[in-house]
Amino acid sequence: MVEKNDLTNEEWKICHEMARVLARGTDRNEFGKVITYMRREQDPKKFLTLLYRLPRSRFIRSKKTQTYFENIYEACRGYLRGLDQERAVLIAFWAFRLLTYYQKAESKTR
Picture 1 (cartoon, rainbow, N blue to C red):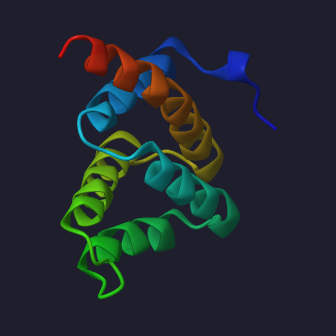
Picture 2: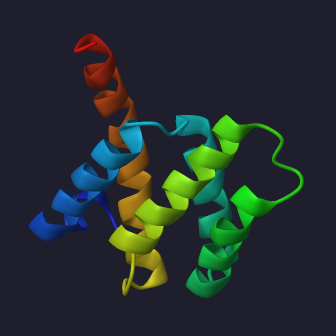
């Protein structure tokens, strides 16, 4: 198991940037569900395929939820590309944790 302190400075930058991007219009709970699936699935290709298909799914009824999943897909595709499963999950997990911080900061500036 990789520990928090095992992230490189570059990986921490990715975590923060990913969280900042997602803070601008993504529901934290939806991102959390995606990370849970990502940890369980262990196949980055299947994971990205699911993320690509989710916003287009007939089970997504709300335009807001559709937008959340589109944002999550774009962030994961951009920031986690080329990483092995363990590193990708760790970075996504810390981005999820930082997402709350950035969403609160964003709401204070409004």
